[in-house]
Image (cartoon, rainbow, N blue to C red; front, side):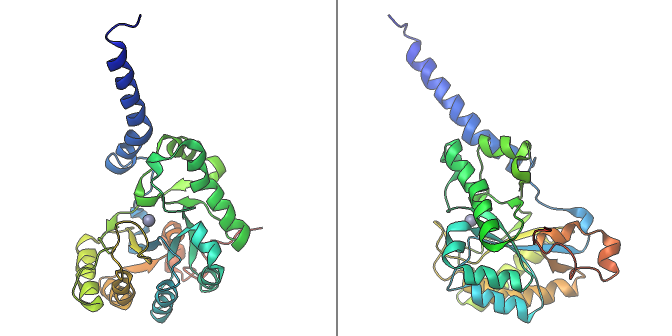
Length: 268
Ligand SMILES: [Zn+2]
C-alpha cells in the first residue's frame, strides 16, 4: 500500500516538471535576459524596426506603402499559416527589401505545447517560409515572447541554425493608445522616444487578430511610420532591418549599408 506521502509527492513532481518545462525558460530569457537577442549596442545609431503577427490583408499592404514612402526597410516576423494564405503580400515585402523571419506556424502559447508541436512552431514554420519564398529564415521570435524548455534546448544547440530574438522596446501598440489613429500614433511615438537607445530592437504589430489585441489598433501603427522615421532622424538614429544591426559601423558609414547588406535572401 502507498504511504500518505505518495499523493503530495506526485503533485510536487508534476508542479516541478511544469515549472522546468514552461516557466523557468521564460525566467531565463525574459528576466535574466539570456539566450535571446534583445538589443545590439554595437549597432550604435541603428534601431531595428520589427513587426509581428502578419501578414494581414487589411493592414500590411498599407503599412508597406507607409514604409516605402519614408524609405524604411523592416523585418517581419510572420505567422507562416497566414503568409502561405497571402503569399502576394510576402512577395511584395521581399521585393521591397524587407526581411522575412518566423513568429510561428500559428499564434499559439508555446509554453503549453509539447515538444513536437513546439518544433512545428519553429522549424516547420521556418522551412515552409523558405520553401515558398526562397528566403533564409534564421531568426525566431516566439509568440508573446514565451518559449519552453524544448525551444531553449534546440536553440542552445543551434538546431537548423535558428536563433532566438525578442525586443528591447515594446510600447503596447496592440491596444488603441488614443481616441484617433493619429492621437494613438503620437502617444506611441512618445513612448518609443523615451526608451530609445543604441542598437534597440523595436517591436510593433501589423495585425489585430491575436488574442489580447484591440480591433483597429494597427491603424495607429501605420500612421506612426512617417512620424517615427522623422523623429528618429532628428535624434541621429536610423531605422533598419534586424540583420542590418550586425553590419560593421565602417561599412554602414561607407554607404554600403543598407542596400547591400542582409537582404535575407538565401546565398545559394
Ligand atoms: Zn505575436
